[in-house]
Length: 245
Image 1 (spheres, rainbow, N blue to C red):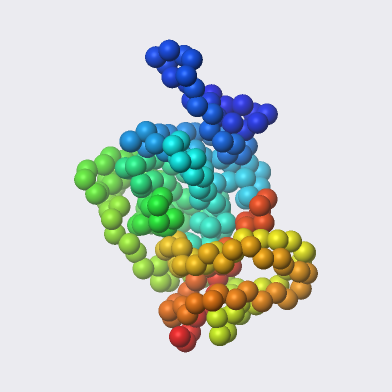
Image 2: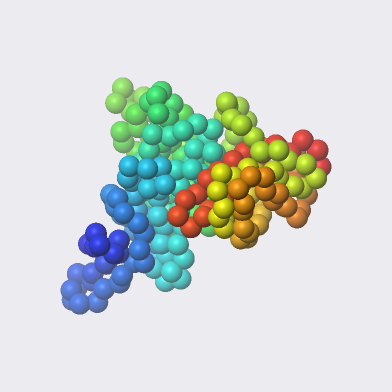
């Protein structure tokens, strides 16, 4: 493959005849890496830049043209701290990606798997400086520079209690959220749980400078949730707590 820095397109060339090619729809700037899924239907690429909005994993389905992103803002919100960056994505199978993050102090390092169809973290482990890995059935074997070995099971779904720290929360009451904006814009709102599972897509709505009310339109279970607002050019995530059904 090759990339065009002017259009942010990736061109996949058939090496057998060097004529047939596929143009992947624009993914964004800061293109660092790309990998095919084992079935050859998806590609995953890492993008990075000077701003948090430029840091994300881009997933593109070559047949359906479906586009997905795992963004800096989503991962920061899911794990409860500002991250320094995202590691190169690697396919474990055609639906599961493996990658890693660290916090800005470089003291906390998470390796995790991401279920692409479900848009969620599947499993994670706090393990420093993974330098090599291998796959065996559902297990990922990790090894660091000190020779310490850890195992990550791609099929286990964690409960992320205790990872939510030093956060401010949106006010939630009677299926409504209060969100304060410093500008007018139109945004797409989605609610996730803390493992990244999509709970409800709230669609598009206009936001005004000041107080906005976001209606969820369904009863949520008790727990911590994440509201993600995508403006088209930026994406923001905020936590909120549901204390009573």
